[in-house]
Image 1: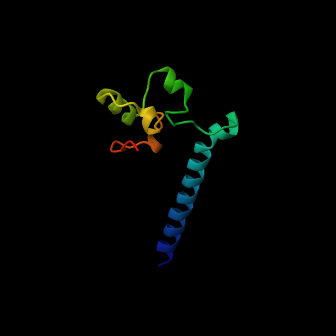
Image 2: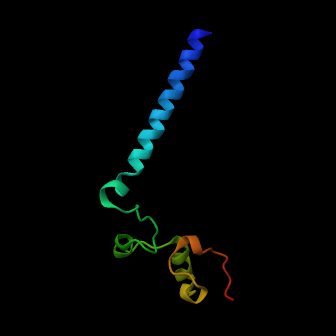
Image 3: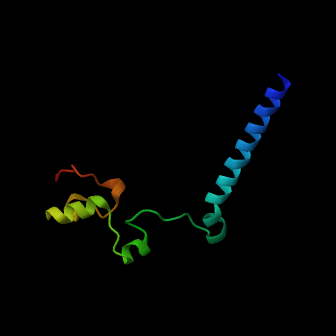
Length: 86
């Protein structure tokens, strides 16, 4: 029983260490650059410069629907495929 308890402590310790390392790794942009990673298509200037668009925006452009009339501005979190005009 003693060997099992020490094995459990090693697994828990390794888990805590890995979670801490992951947290530090995800925080590097915040630590060194002073801002969060901008992964939203509507606000990321580099994605816009490269012509990357929200999938919903692309599908609406393919069908000829104007996203601006529906209140969608390329922000996937505020758009959905079945959004109806009011």
